[in-house]
Image (cartoon, rainbow, N blue to C red; front, top):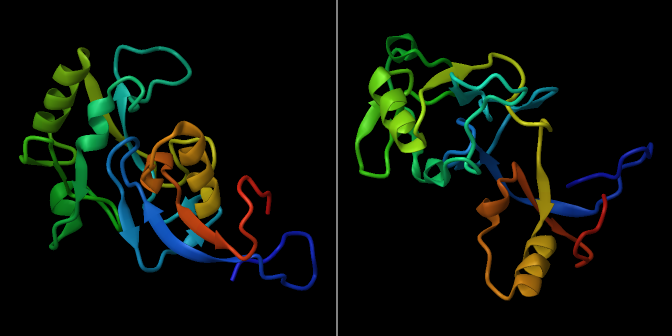
Length: 178
């Protein structure tokens, strides 16, 4: 149940349909059954990102707008001692490339491969708290995704919007503010 903000009594406005986490900025995500939500967003969400080492702007993170192929890379978690791979907690230990190779998340091979595709050197960075994006959590309603698809004249995959929470509202109204 989702409750309205600012009221002393919860008001049901809809139900959570799905929860998603994206461990590495602009890479593939994963659907979760449960997640811990804190001031910094979902645990393990957007804690890793490639930094463009030659970029001195206020936004040095490599994103899919600069390298669309990043969306084809898939973070993977291998069981065992996470320190062995440089990852901690909910973070991935490996990345599956679009070619099907599995590489260590903090390995030089992965940074070199991504850097070649991008055309400049990159380095994997990790934030222990906080995220590499503007907002700590992203919520979208199913009806909003459907309406955008209708206006665009095509069926859209909700993951295109990279939400953390997909909501099914009780009242079917696209673009409704909660």
